[in-house]
Image 1 (cartoon, rainbow, N blue to C red):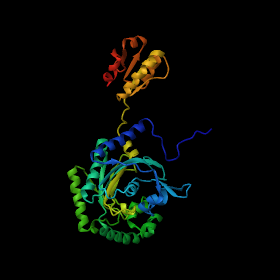
Image 2: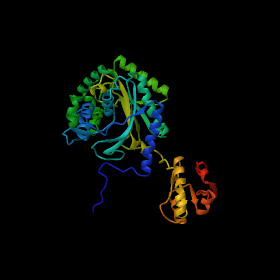
Image 3: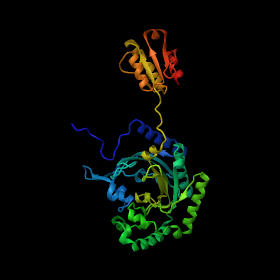
Image 4: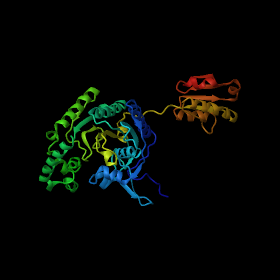
Length: 411
């Protein structure tokens, strides 16, 4: 029989890789909680319109990468390729548009059909945060600062750089799109087919092209700065001042874009040189029109998403598993007496294990293999005396400890 392997573009999270993954998510949970964010869990699949409507019909995600299918009832369903659209759908579906602001954190699997490579999978995982309701640049600065604090807490901030741009307000973007349309039309003979398809509908998306020939043309394209209105310039300047107040270093990158109509003002990426071509580890921006796309009222919002696998790859070392305590009964009668001790340790928050078979020597050998820090050895004489022998497996020392004091002593 052929050995079955994970589907292409998926991977198992086991051992050190799982510990890295878990550490990233739990660290983010702790940090976002200090900023007042609550965790939401939305379905892994949604009505296809949730993504087709919000990500744009000309985007690579919609045209090439979504896992979409008709279910048995004939409904078009899509495995979520990102998290923001589902959060905004949930906001509207649950009648929360009148209870703002909403400060949302999420973490979970996403799905995109693309070529697997380092740090990029077809089933991958993201964590993210969305601040829905405030229109002020302080909100943008706060979510960026929270992301920076997560990177600092993970000890990877020194390996990342925050790149910042503005997309301006609607008037600014319209003027900029007109300028891009003129520029790219002059070079349309050299554009890729994908970029040609975007030329009339949304020339800003050409700035996102990964095609090498397109990249050379994009390098000479105009930037948005000269087309910003006074209000948009003021918003951007205030954001930069606030980031400085929050202690978040940044550099401007006028090529960062979000090409959809409901994106505006802030666009940013935390990037690294340690992961090769896939250098973005956290990215986001302001999307004041997305909630309205879901059928809700016009609602300002800003947020970001981060790749959990990529952040985990940046960790210098995987967090160590807590060293267990091994409970080692000698004989069948001792095993019955050992179970309450085992459970008392666990109730006290101590990782405790007991081998399922074997004599004293074999059980101690197994304890050493698992990296146990201590062994609780329990024989018939110990039971009669109400004690157990607690052996420090790091130093080799051993002492008799009253059974009701073992958990406190080990803690």
